[in-house]
Amino acid sequence: LDCFHWEMKKYNSLFIFSSCNWTCMHLTLQWPGSFCIGINNKTICKIPQTVQYWTIHGLWPIRTGHCCDCWPIYHSHLEEIEPELAKLWPSFIKGKHFFYFWKDEWIKHGTCAGCVETMGSPFLYFQAAVKLRKLFDIDNILESSGIKTSCEVSYKLDDIRGVLTPVLGQIYDLQCVTDSKGREAWIQLKIHLFRNQTLGCPKQEQEQKFDLLAWSNSTGHPCPKNSTIFYVPINYENPHEPCN
Image 1 (cartoon, rainbow, N blue to C red):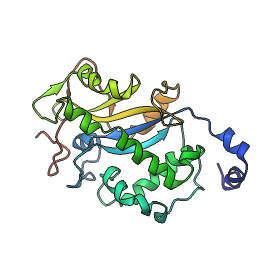
Image 2: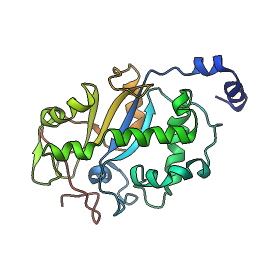
Image 3: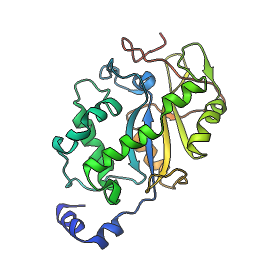
């Protein structure tokens, strides 16, 4: 949208409704232990020592392209929840202030989500993501089921899904990266949600194109069914090769 049409959008509810042309969204969580394996530029990745759990990568309405550059976000919009965002939605790129990561996510994805009342501002959008991350406590789910980080023990995809499906339902995606030794390392979990933030939204036709854009700077891919998967520990000293 250009700025003229954005002004129309703000004041015309019919225009807002017609522009909200997406059905599903992904709450995408990332595992810091394998994040840097998937970064093509090995010099820019760093995991803060304070990070010890699954973090938010994004809350993404499923559509191609972003919606509007004219809906600004300022640091003051997020001050109330900044401590939680810093904990649950940090950046792992050296020298990139957390706010600029959040700003990128807002421009690319939040402006599309903003047509839904419960996510209709920068604060509401990020607050929704934080609430969902707390609701889906993946660290606890895995730990209580005996799935723990290791460089020696790997897991069958069906075993991981057997733990997650009772909590997430049938529709979610596990994504992996391949390390320098050819091992599949689990990097992301995409939870499929309807606009009202409930589980089970079916996969959309445009998801393949959306995924290609999302992985354009990474080597990530769907976790293969025919090989075991490593849930690698976080290696703060050598995050690009956590098991070496």
